[in-house]
Image 1 (cartoon, helix red, strand yellow):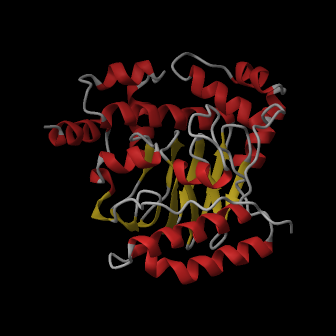
Image 2 (image 1 turned 135 degrees about the vertical axis):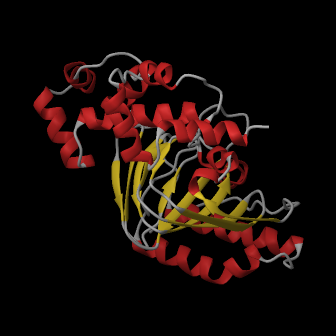
Amino acid sequence: MSDVSVNPVSGPPSPYLRFRRATTSARRGPELDQVYGTGGGVGSVLEQFRYAGAGDADVSFRGASVEGTRAGTMQRRPDHIVFWIGDGTATITSAHGGTIVVTPGRPLFLSAGTVYDFTAATSRVTLLHLSDAILRAAVGAQDGVAQDLLFEELPHDDHALHRLRAVLDVSTAGLVSADTSADARASLNDQVVAAVLAAFPRREHDPVAPAPVGRAIAFMHEHAHRELSVQEVAEAAGLSVRGLQDAFTRELQTSPMNHLRALRLDGVHADLASGCVDSISDVAHAWQFHHQGRFASSYAARFGEKPSATLRSAKASRP
């Protein structure tokens, strides 16, 4: 494996941070949606939700203990994230079309500027947050560069992955401790960043066209508020209808129109969870749900509650 050149980024560290939340998923609070770019659009049937973490604004560890199966979209986020699951499985599809099945113990890198669709059936998730600023400093990119920093989602090789695990094993206690000195914390941050960049190299913006499923998903996001036929989605993806259906079944284990329906349900949920709407039927119609009975049934199956319950809870929590 070739050596990776990483600039040391030691300097005045960010203030130490510690956070903890234990609640039901429906009341997990808007701050987590802001951190992960979910904006309320996470379908789930969760009951208990626990989230905790510590570190500073540049490097921090987070952990979540959850129940149920979740699906949704992560929009652009403030931080880059390396995450791994402790059990179960997850599927991540990036906006440029790649689909990855995540297995326990195998880390994945989520670039801050990339949109991801996901499904997750896991009860334990560990996340390493890295600020865009500290990674830009490490790779020598200037903050004024308009292009997003992009990194490989999968580990570069087993040697680099082994090194990353070894660095995390010896540095985690210091990173999450409030007693770690400023100089020691900056040094630990440097070590973690170097190991992460060795395992997940920076990649340039992909000059090739996105894969067909990625094109289809991007087209769905752009046109979700209007009527869409599977033929239109197939044409946008550059496939026949049969080819599109086969690609979705192979990569996402669902059909194109089921994926579109889930995306629209997530949109309805996000609008209702904002507490800023008054008519559920108007929101449903805006997302192309014209049969209220079928819509209510699909919504309850995806989110574990009636649309009215989501809106009522959101309005109750507003100041």
